[in-house]
Length: 508
Image (cartoon, rainbow, N blue to C red; front, side):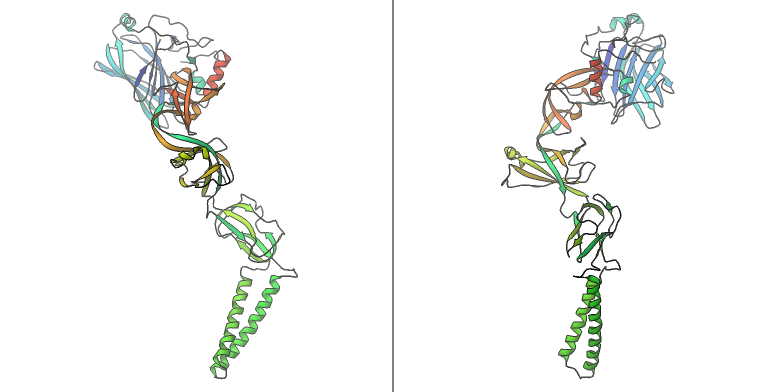
């Protein structure tokens, strides 16, 4: 059988090892060991894999011959974070060329992902096969250029190329890949930075926190039931009440009452002084002194009774956020000015990376960074809307130099958390890179799985360079344009360890 693997921008012809057998209904099966049955005639079937930005097409059919019905087993996969079979929709196959055109439509897949199409070519020549896909979610078009329709089977057999060996290929069926979290991605050349890997800690950004303090001495009552560290609070929310009622010392209600009594006396003295001053019976100095005593008494009453209700003085937060630290317990005595809680907006955070002095020469070349959180998620500095804030200029009493980044708060990035930091320095040009998720380790060696055709894979040993947490520089083992498995590689590894494939075939 002839196998053809075609990318989005280029066509790659690859001869594969397993011949496919198409029965009277256009299907193909696999033997118990994963190989395909021998072909029923000398005309060997083709297996072609094509990609667009949205779709993968893996299609099997015998070379086209005038007057002979051609049966296409077309496997359609939707690309994305995870590759899945197209379960709904229609596919129209159009064959067009200088000798004319004809088309056929499959209104639905025979089983999810697999469409069966039949067409009988009428005239020999060079044609283009166009697969138009319509699903509830999107439309797409996959094009196979330069397909020959032969005048007769003898001519087709004479022009087919001999098969090359593919003994290292691993068969992993589409039906298997569709059931797992599977994806692949082309190997690319891209600018890749020299990376310094280190650790870091997340801290709160300056100005992002508010300390809620007691305005008077007394007993603290937590006003909001269920107030714990991590609780959300709104701007102006009453968090605490501080009351000194019943205390023998610094009893606020008594102090307020005393201040009000003094205010009443000061007011009466001022009003009497004002009348005498107006009648020119009191000198200005004595009048101004009475006025000053009265105004001071007013200010003292306002200060003592501000936010002080029947239950005590209420303590509010000035900003919305969450309780980072709850510094008191219910019923605790506090002095005036004592901190009660820390409220954080948590919109901005700071990542403090500790860089060894051994790589000090690279620090001034830092341009960006990636961060891997405890849940394995990797963020770039751009994804976090972040920026490099500062680089430490001293390593006094420590072996490390701090580097600070300001970032947005995202899932998995919380104050106090330790994270992995990949500091990017001077960028290289045109490095060969693959996603870090494609790389597997085995006995101190690195490898990946390359999809050589729709259902064929090869295990490749890799020689790798640096890693920025998202991508890995590959020095050898793969070439640009090949597609490496980024999700599901472990399942492929397990299938090879089992020694045999599931005893089932495609249901065409």
